[in-house]
Length: 236
Image 1 (spheres, rainbow, N blue to C red):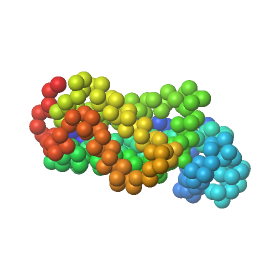
Image 2: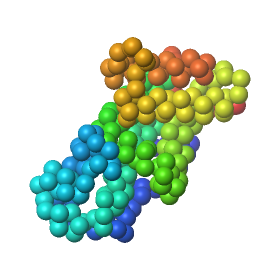
Image 3: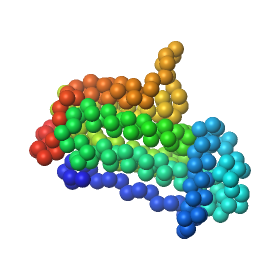
Image 4: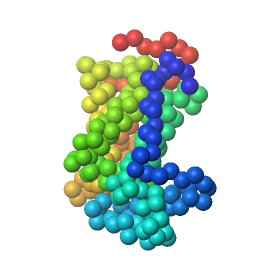
């Protein structure tokens, strides 16, 4: 990546000391099955309703095997948090890669970024919803999720700030509010299934289109502007 097109990437969180990392391929496969099982169950029920016994049964392991890897259910949620964080940061990394977007329009870049983010939200929906709800009563988790919000999407925000002409009266405020609105809509629609009263659910493609339109129109950005990373960034 070209250094002057992005802010430094966040360091990925390490596995909790309350999680025993597998050392062999077979153990790693079992570990991933337990995470996959918990993720699937969390799409069906709340974190409080999902028991260790249900996770073990869905993963095809014993309860003893679960505790061989995780100190408790909260430790497993921390492992899911790491998985979600890595998935979101991977989307951000691709979104700000100059090699990928040289010559593309701003509209294309933002739409593809949002489309990939929507896919990630869908794939991690159970864990994502559990983490958002748990953060309301867990200050440490809330701080960690806040750091993800600070170190993730703002890199895309920086891309826009450098390469687009923003006609919002206060560009910095507009960028922050715009991305907060997009994040909030993604959470409500994808994690909690909200729709407009009496309306129908949008397809993922339509949702990416509408969020792109919402963000660019709000900021007053010309979506047809092409990204030229070799050019000097725009001044504010």
